[in-house]
Length: 354
Image 1 (cartoon, rainbow, N blue to C red):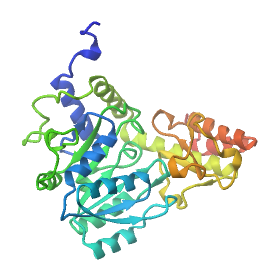
Image 2: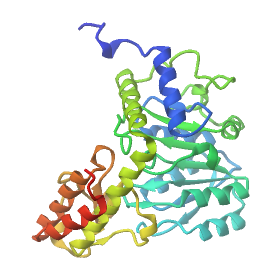
Image 3: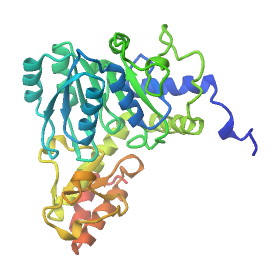
């Protein structure tokens, strides 16, 4: 095999620096993020392993399966975990968050920004404002949200934010990142149980003290995936992050319009908090909607949500009028209905845009 093939040339320091700077711009932060050599779930678990310890109390907001899993990882590290949990067809009311903070006096607050499996998006800005008022460490799973909705890390004073590229960014899933604030690094370093010499160690990947990227490229960074992410982020910058977010917002609005034109209801109850990444559809006894495998970007519910909802995955390259029209046409076919009224409703949202 030719070892000089591009895929086998080690990632150059200049490429690693480019990727680090791209991610910092994406997140509107002046602090270089930690680049994770794997899928985003690795970064999420690494956050939990690094910050969890006996004597620490976390307020963990659960609005979907990933919130539950994060709480389990925090408990595994010995932390006390208090849940604010709501049904998965809702997002968390900020009043409940505020009341729980007052009652339990936690050290940190954690939540999933956007739940692609449930189609809901938590009110991140409001939650973080409450957390700032109480000087809490803040931990966000923003894997799905990034690129689909706002994530101004420094403005919001987010201490930990895990992101992935495989959703709205239309990138690879083999490399991801965790944004960590200076206060977040202090929180990590104060934990004597934080992993070292481990795939779950964030401390091993800490950038230099001067805020620059590490002197050397970590040897376990997947080279092909890193280069694919550099390309994907360059395309995001070329289109413009605000435009990418608007495209996802339009895809979500048109999907909801199409779903309603078919006589179906969104799974999420509050229209103010629909995800821009996915639109979830309440099945409500419609046996024809009980599909077992994806049909295009229409997918059955995951795990406990199977049989309760369908999900339209309009993210990344599928945040487009054409993809939404195809998805809604699929729903119409399952229902044995004419798709024309739904296609018209979609067109009204997009106007003349493709």
